[in-house]
Image: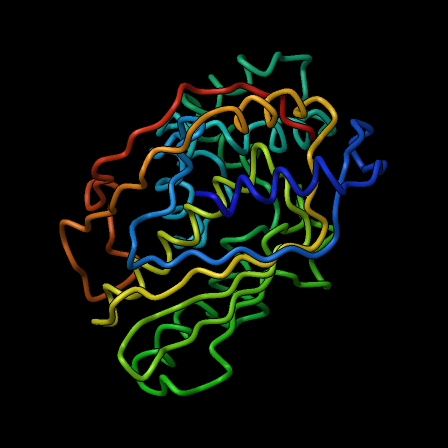
Length: 289
């Protein structure tokens, strides 16, 4: 994962101090690209431990088209809790519950979860119902039936619904490419990239999506190309980034899919095994909401 560490070092060396929506403060660069050859292994960061359970469950949640955190919470995935809780705090039903009390209600109260677990029309909605268009299925159909197309695109940025979202999409636009020798690649444009917390997760998530679609379409994996707009390190993550840069990366492992399926919705958490994943210990950092 030298590509990621090079990005971290570039921001430390060249980044400009810049304010941000959360008030935390960042150092950032504009415009950066990383390339990962998925034939060489699966790009899970090794300089800190990644929570692979969350990576898989979040992607399955996107694919399902859901915009409610209940599935995630009930599978012990917390990555969207802050935004859903912030949304709930603005609702008339809010009774000064703590975050822990809110999460417990999501786990145990179906009616409460159905109303207050909603994030608005975030990724899953745009992937599966962008103004009535199932973009993900269209991508799969084009890969299968017209692999030379230059229009194999998926866009999560829907200007008509941005104001209804708890968080507008950071990873915005995908383009898929099928090479003449039968390899599937994907380029992602990410407008806003939280380099400590978000980017390692994003790399793994989209590499997983490429691997799933390749498996579904009887292709091999090619490259994941990750293009970043505003790539930033929050001011309260600088020490964590510097710690990672002192750590020697381990060789990356592999992703094994145990069961193939005919439909993208049929893949389950149990179908995926990350083999030979070695990492340094977890490094914690506060999320900026």
